[in-house]
Amino acid sequence: MSAIGKGLRRRGRLMVQAVSPPRRGLGAVPSPRPTDGAEAYEAPRAPRLVESPVFVLSSVRSGSTLLRVLLNSHSRIRAPHEMHLRTVHARFARDFTADAMKALELDRTEIEHVLWDRLLHLELTRSGKEIIVDKTPPNTLIWPRLNRCWPNARYILLLRHPGAVITSLTHRRTDPDPEAIRAEVSRYSEKLEEARQSLPVHMIKYEELTAEPEKVTRGLCDHLDVPWEPGMLDYGSQDHGTFRPQLGDWSSTIKSGRIQRAREAGPEAPLSPRLAEIARAWGYPDR
Image (cartoon, rainbow, N blue to C red; front, side, top):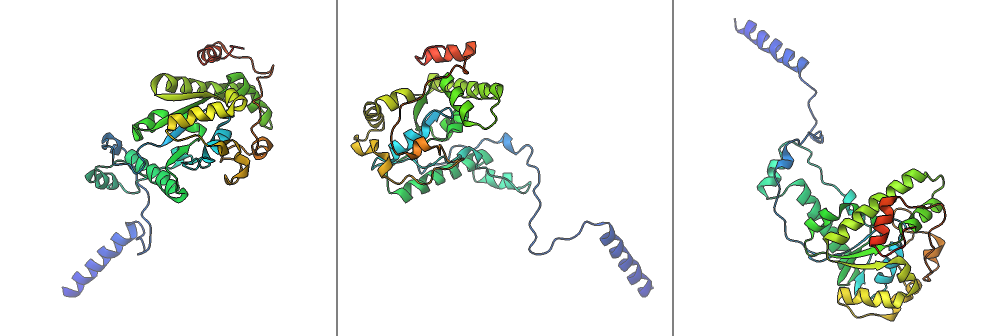
């Protein structure tokens, strides 16, 4: 009877092993599991290392790289290349991770905010400066989230005539799609107009920045509560990192180290009724 019992138990173990999934080794990484429902909890805002960062809100092809290097030339302002914070995400790999974070008064959104804040603080600390400016144009599309993350953030609204933006994008791209370009400019313009009406912004125009750089940068310094420095206009004499795609403008214009007058809209850039309305609201002609 003892032998029969051992045989039956052994057969049972073998059957269980046969229908069970493979066992993980000691060094195996758990597979990601869905976190549906975890977002129902909204965490309170955690303390920030950088309480009042500065964000440049602009469309693409609006001179944000020029503005960056002018600001970065100031002894107290760090304006690095485009940081693309909105593409830096946190992921919960197991279904119990959300509960563990909730016990720490964190959710996935707030973890991302803490991470974004840490990245800004790290860059600011490395620079030895006092103020950090992020000029990534797609930040414009998520300005409500930036405002939620940093309620004390400061904003510079950099505008350019929508028709000139369309012209610049058309000339910049190898195989331009006119409809896609107009849709892109419209999307940015709508978000910029929302921000203009909703946030305490310091508004400047790219055309004025290139025509009267000293006057505009003096106003910027007043807004940021720092003294104006003449060296800001001589950005070509300083190191601003590599100019290359995905990190900002990399054209010969920005690489020249000289401020050059903004180009106007071309005949290929007629404005839709809505874009014309936004252009008028910004003080531009609607053509």
